[in-house]
Image (cartoon, rainbow, N blue to C red; front, top):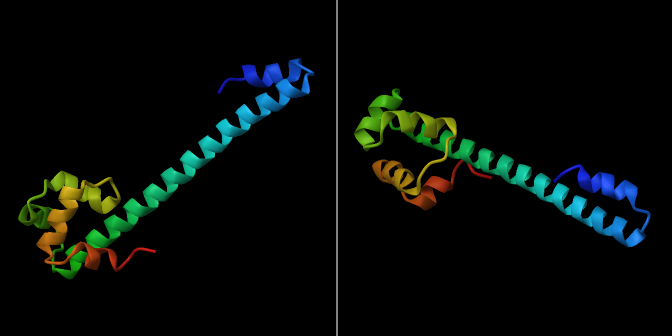
Length: 113
């Protein structure tokens, strides 16, 4: 979105052109707001996933992320990022869930709104 539309909006007195420009600006602004809200929701979900993964590790008696990651077959550097709320692949989530001998349903039954 450029400021050319705003300048054009001020330049023309034709109500049709102004209403069209207004719709374009409004649509653009709405799409930006929607993307920001989606990103916030995604980040919130990833933080919840990370917290749930951390809780499971601690309940299993692992104080070290490194030890757990090694035993679960997940690269240590990736596992730490998952607990911090980074995007996790479904296959690595499956490894973690399988390691704890629980189902996806059991995993998502706690810690998610």
